[in-house]
Image (cartoon, rainbow, N blue to C red; front, top):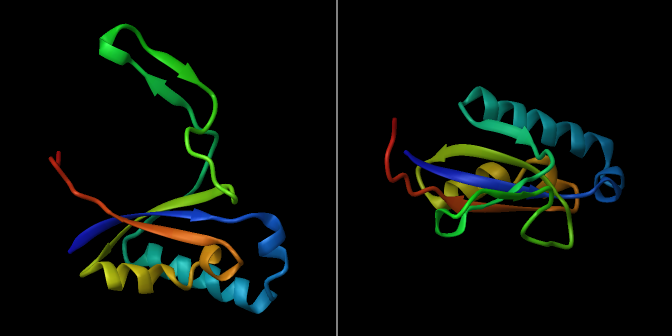
Length: 112
């Protein structure tokens, strides 16, 4: 099975305007993904790390990328194809509650 990184974007305004029964179903779907082996988590505060030409580590407490919606969370899922991965995340809270979910294939270079 292939692995995919998903990034969920959403805000409380979109979440709150979504019907409670849809939100509950989306959270139940997310719990089901965890039961089948997904690793799901909420996004904390990011740290930028730079070490250009190994000249010393510099960090900044901010995100590098900007988007219209804040990053709400991440997941690592397994699926047989990109199409299946899309279907799996299409019923999660960010997808249902006026947000968006990106699905990125994870190309594993080494595994420990």
